Amino acid sequence: MDADRSAPVYETAEIDVDATPDAVWDTLTDVDSWPRWMPGVQSVVTHGPLAAGSRFEWKAGPGAIRSEVAEAERPRSAAWKGRTFGIRAAHAWRIEDSGPALTHVYSAESWTGLLPRLLPGVLRKAVRRALDEGLPALKAEAERRSPRAEVGDDRPVG
Picture (cartoon, rainbow, N blue to C red):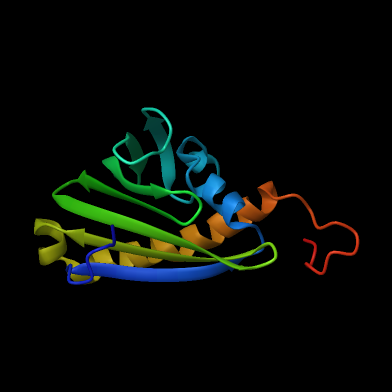
């Protein structure tokens, strides 16, 4: 599943992470941990492990979001769709191996529905801010969870 490029609200972001694709996947899909490290996420309730068809509810900002996982392909991709306040959202993640313990993460999010049609500029800024804060937070958490570089490893430490 991909985010809807033709939606009134569509934004993308990408970042390089000094961790393996498995470490990035494990961090991203540990939905229960989001309130500890993902900016704006206040609470999460999951209903089993993250897998295609599983559901979770979470609170971010003023609204509660009910999401369903549309794609979960370890460690390459994850995607979910959700609904809140007349907004239908889709969020897709691509995780690419970029070398020894280096991963490139690409994220795309789209919003459709009445509010995105009425307020595309305002809502686009909200999605842009969420991506601009969320990807560095994912990077920091995945790197924190990853084992430190071994002696003789070329990776920078820290």
